[in-house]
Length: 615
Ligand code: ADP
Ligand code: ZN
Image 1 (spheres, rainbow, N blue to C red):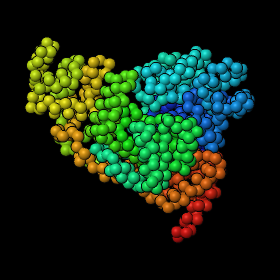
Image 2: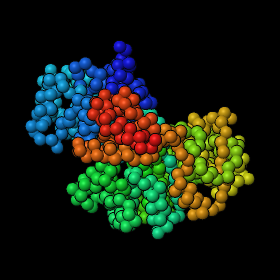
Image 3: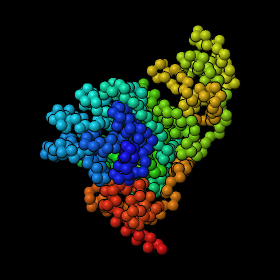
Image 4: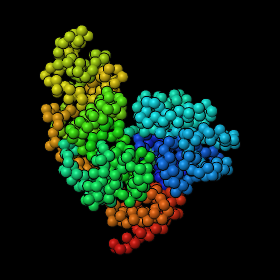
């Protein structure tokens, strides 16, 4: 059998999936050929399969998976074992005898995936005999940004991983992360000693998440909107992020009073209280968690249907990471953010008290610009992460209710040309002065008044140029080089507009930037557009509810989280295709051999009963 066919057969029988997604197969193939790699995919992008499949394909070898999050590790092992995959973990949470047993099984060749914490790894490996070490087929480093001081989550225990490549030069190393920036990426390659690692970057777009921002709604009205929103999502799980601990408690109390199953979660609670909330949420016993930013790390719940930001987050990175906890199963999900000027004031205080005042103030300003913008939200997000996205998404509140636009190609070309003629050595204000033809001292000094573009944009005001340049930035035509005095640079996409190969629509300039009436909350509360065509169309909602009960009962009986029995996506397919026999059931997304054996009876019985009753 060709190796791709073999891989697909494993994918079907172990996971119940029909095909690889995006770059998964490319990464796997490169690994099977012995290459090192750095894999950048957003949360929910499907990183795990990239290292699990090579481990499973190996004849008598096994893959080492290094992961810093113990809770997540045990969770993943449970999920893998549910699928009949021989995966085990070595970590400090397990007893000495459990760990010894794991090593025994490893020696007998009965383990394909060995999850291990970074601090345990080196001491452990030094005890292994060559008969074990020469069977290592892959070293996967999950959350690889933790090795870099530039990353947002540096962990000193990761730095020792650098010796692995020298010790096992012939074993491919795979570094995986959901953090995108260039500095961190380069640092990972250096620290892990994999200079020739191939870089795999998949899109950071999460098209199934509908993005919505509501401006200027506060107090009781905000609470009413949130309750209304949650009621539209009855029976579904969601997270509400708040700025302060006290807010999470107030929010949870208010929601509980309205009959909504909600709990608070914040760093001030005891470990056991936090674990309990986390467990109840994962088990679908609590529907809504009101949390500070601490919640969500290490939670792999795939059926979070919405994330609400009760206040604006402090930067775009946090916003992106937090909304990413919704819709990991790929089904439509909602992100709803409330934004008022009071948030900005509070966040400015936070930023001033932080260690890096300037950086944090800049990031806050960009977050505010995102919230106030009339540009498609997804365009802004992806441009922020240096990803090209040159069309409107039709799944955000701006796209659902766009401001008045005009063909801004000519203005954009003026600005792009001016930026080029400064050799990309000028910031936003200087570019505006050049366009407006202001002969002020430093312009003359640099000779900018002799540029061909000097004064070509004199018919627009300062404010207009600033607004249009900001839109161009948010749409990814230009970039700000933060490491070079904030000079403006023209991107590849910008070049296409400059040379007439693409056109660009700009929002007509409006003097009033902050207006609570411009964006009605109702537009956000009723999610913009039902995302892509999904099987949800013909889904039998009543049957779905019934199957959800079956899942819950089975999960409780075997002490598992419901989503480990089946994902919402699998239930949706069942409630659509309505399989009543074992062969039909085996075709459902997420039904591998092991789960088919285990679960086909209760689910098909429930479906048959439902069909009989509704004849
Ligand atoms: P990440 O680690 O990148 O956050 P995961 O590996 O947990 O993402 O994958 C996210 C979800 O997508 C999981 O529920 C996983 O089972 C599912 N998934 C991954 N690859 C595929 C695939 N090829 N086909 C169908 N579902 C997939
Ligand atoms: Zn959009």
